[in-house]
Length: 141
Image (cartoon, rainbow, N blue to C red; front, top):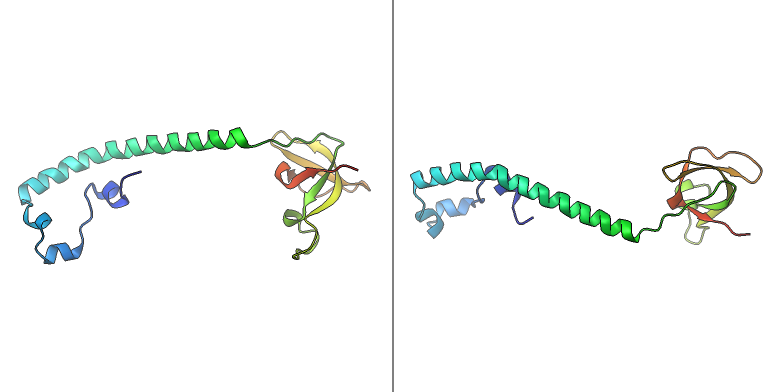
């Protein structure tokens, strides 16, 4: 956000220790009184800088969220529909290089409002915990 963390913390730019031992233009041109005055002014401005950066950060997050939400396609399952479950998440079978990616089919028995689904096997045994729609895909006979 065009500001260093040191500048946001202390209100001044960081100085290398080498600059204090070797005579540089930056060190030679400073005056103690004007330096103290400038430090006080910078500390007064510091809070305003932090608020501006916070506003920019919130706007950036909002724009990123809007961009993401425009491109995400929500998967919805209907109760009674058959789905496959991602093996990577369920770990029902050992994961090997050429192993199965999906396992199932399972029947959706309950759909929660937040995209989580309760599943059961074809034999009627309920699968523990709910499963997110990201880890499911529709199964076609």
